[in-house]
Amino acid sequence: MSRRPTVYDVAERVGVSITTVSFAFRQPAKIRDSTREAVLAAARELGYVASASARGLAEGATGAFGMYAFDLMLAERTRSSDQDLLSAPAQGLDPRLFPLYVDEVERGFALECRADGRVLLLASGAAGGATMYDIAGRVDGLATFPGPHQPDALQQIARRIPVVVFNTPVEQDDPFGHIDVDNRAGVQYLVEHLVQVHGIADLAFVGDLSMHEFQERLEGFRDVRRSLVPDADPDTDARAALTGTGWRAALTDLVAADRIPRGLVCQNDQQALDVLDLLAAHDVRVPEQVVVTGFDGILAGRLATPTLTTVRQPLESMGRLAARLLARKLADPAAAPERHVLPLQPTFQGSCGCAAP
Image (cartoon, rainbow, N blue to C red; front, side):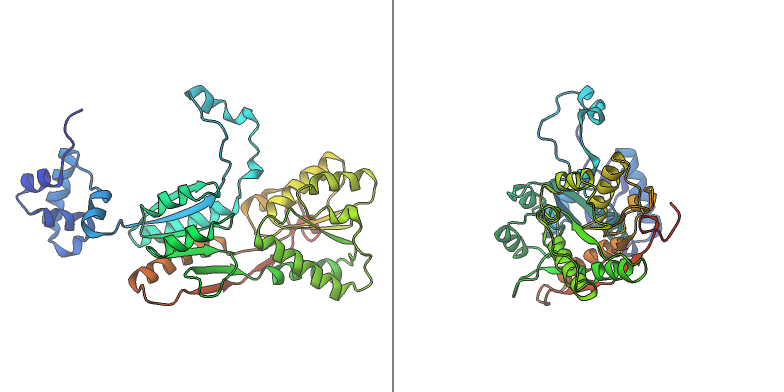
């Protein structure tokens, strides 16, 4: 391959300084339009692309923000050929393992980065933190989704760059920006609707409780059920098993024994979609026999049959706000970390009988 053109080549072609070339790409308002057009024309002719890495070395900044999520359908194997990639859909990957709400938050984050002239880097990895350290070394600020965080890793990263976390417990004096929703209130909307509008008192919570936000939703479910249905039967062992990693087998057993609760409040939309599939496979009709609710408001829930009753998080707004918090902290490193609790919107659809499928 021929030598890659540099900023010096562009400057020489146009007859300007390398500073002027840099302004043409990054701060065009500082130079005349005719000069910028000449620089860009020379860059196209030479095949020059501005280097963010070089800029970072020179300025101590990258112009990029990062977004990190844990184990997003990461394959346990390494693919060795194009044919492996082409045949991946047939290899048993379950799309429900991918947290679909991540896509919608990422969209908001990407839009805000673009509006602010920043590059976006996306990464995912396991709980060990190596991948998180890697992306943190390439960006000026990092937003991270809930997961098996290594507190020491995040604390160390936050000493160097701003960090914003979604739906993560607030620890005393932690250095992170926080974006949360009121998980307990969200479940309260759903249970109140099922009890007061549909007259359903036989309710159970479904989920593996793998994250803090899911545990908050279960606590909210128990609180509001206790308030609205004080004489509800205590959970049996079979129903208690619905709040654990074996929830699917426990629900299958209840279906087989014809003891399924009238209402199933799921920890999130993806769990609810999984429940809808399981019930359909056993010819259990929703909402005629069983009512199902979710939590998040992902697009897939609006496309399900029946459409999913849920509580919508403002997913795109969460992503946009995360980028803004990083930018504000970057501009004022001494400012105290911000915490925002965003509003939720209950949406009553076909899975509870409020709207046609």
